[in-house]
Structures are given as C-alpha cells and as structure tokens.
Length: 203
Image 1 (cartoon, rainbow, N blue to C red):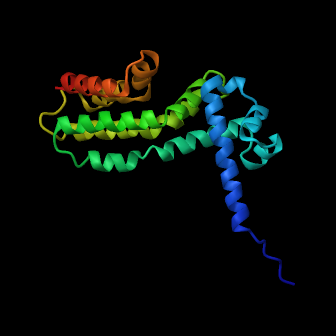
Image 2: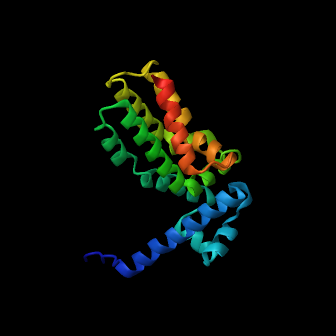
C-alpha cells in the first residue's frame, strides 16, 4: 500500500516563516539592547507576542536564535555584489572610497545585528568561534580588497597582509563602532575621515 504524502500548506508555511522572522527580529533587538545573557526565551516570546513553546518550535533555543541572527547578518550584508563592483575600480582612490562607503552602509544597516552579536560574546559558550563565523566573510572581503589595491598604481607601501590588517582596523566593525557608537561621530563624518586616513596612510 503506498504511503501517504505529507501535504504542506503554502499559507501555513508562509505563516511559519513570518513567525520565525518576527521572533528573530525581536530577539535581535532585545540582545542588542539588554545583552544576550540578560534575555530569556520568555522575554523574546513576550516581545514577539507568541508563547515560549512557539519560540522553541519555530526557531529553537536562545543559542539557536543567535546562530540564526549571525547567519542572516552575513547573508544580508551584500558583500559579494559590493566586492564585484569594487574589483572593477582601477584607482586606489576609487577603491578606498568604495570601501569606506560600502562598509559604512553595511555597518549602519546591520548595527542592531552587530550589537546583538557583540554583547553575546562575553557570555556565549563559544564566543570566539561565534565572532569568527560572524566576521570571516567580512575579513576575507577586505583581504581581497587589499590584494586588488596591490595590482593598482601606486600600490600600498605595506605588504598585502599588512594592508589587509589596516583595512580591517579602519573599515572593520570595531573601527566603525568606536567612532560612531562610542565617540558619537556621524556616519558621514566617520566615512570621510576613514577614507582620507586610509588614502594617506597606504601611499
């Protein structure tokens, strides 16, 4: 006797997706505001307007939610398209200007996600691995940018690895956070200063 095929309702699946997005969105805001260690699944459920069992059924544990936040943050960064455009630039000035603007847009748009992850690191059971996973593609993109800069004229005065490290210092999430969040700079001012700093220091 043939086995029965499981019917999946498109409307039900769409509702499930919306519920997951709602839960993850509220969890991101709570983690960023209060810190991962001070937020419970019950807090997330209350903010999302669902039962705690719905959180576990839809997304999983608090750690599962954080992992989803990391994965969504990476996929939403748009770094691949940005790097394709950057590699088409043929002068150091245009590359660095695009880096400054692109990383500014990414950090500004993903600020809540970055804060949620950053505040989880001290209390997460494997914070170092979490941060590495959250930033690996970012660092690789800046290393690719460094190699590209060394194909242009004039090339940076530093070796490729050092150039990549300096780009991470200026255009990585910590640099943006230091200037905008901790020091109160506007995003426009930070973008302009970081661009000019990189242009002056690399040549």
